[in-house]
Image (cartoon, rainbow, N blue to C red; front, side):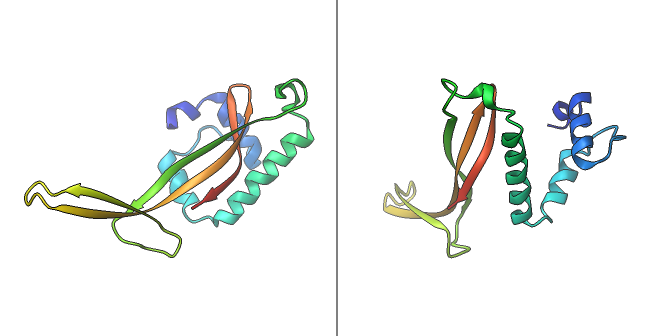
Length: 135
């Protein structure tokens, strides 16, 4: 990821976004992840929403409307975490039956998990996350 994003155009765009026009390179993605782990998720959500609103207001995506009228929206759902034990009240639960190879007995394995459902706006060869819901 670091090499893909450490290109002149991306560095220039991130520099503008951060108000640092002299930015020469991007931090390593581990450094970015460490920083983001400390940021309130609600603040990141607000930034994402503000960015999308500004892009719509500037009509940046109008040429990508379907038949000049409709927006292409993709719905994407996936699992993001799994646990052997329930760790919070929001955990989803899946039970799976299997045959124990040693004893031949039927047993049940319980997995706790979280999933995410996300709506994405399709604009050319890009998709932008419009909203998401974690389950």
